[in-house]
Image (cartoon, rainbow, N blue to C red; front, side, top):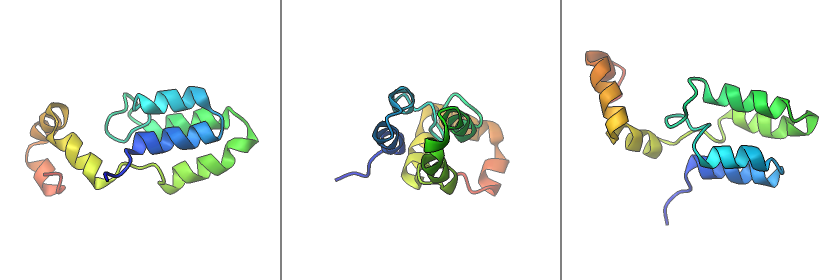
Length: 101
C-alpha cells in the first residue's frame, strides 16, 4: 500500500475541521511544497486559516510543525518531472552542491 500524498493528507485534515473550501484547494495541490503556484505555500495556508478564526489554531500548529510537508518520495517525483528537471538544469552545478540531484 502506498503512502498517502501530502496534499490528500492536508485535504482530509481540512475537511475534518470543516474547511471544505480549503480542502478543495489542497486537493488541487495549491499548498504543496513543490506543486503549489505560491512561492510560500504554507504562509498562504496559515493566512487563510487565521482568517477562519481561533478554532483553526490546532491546524495552524500542525502546518507550522511540518505535518503536511511533502516527503522525500514526493520531492523525488517532482525532481524527475519535466518541471523539476528543468529547474535543476537551470541551477546547474548549484543543484549538485545542494544535493538536489
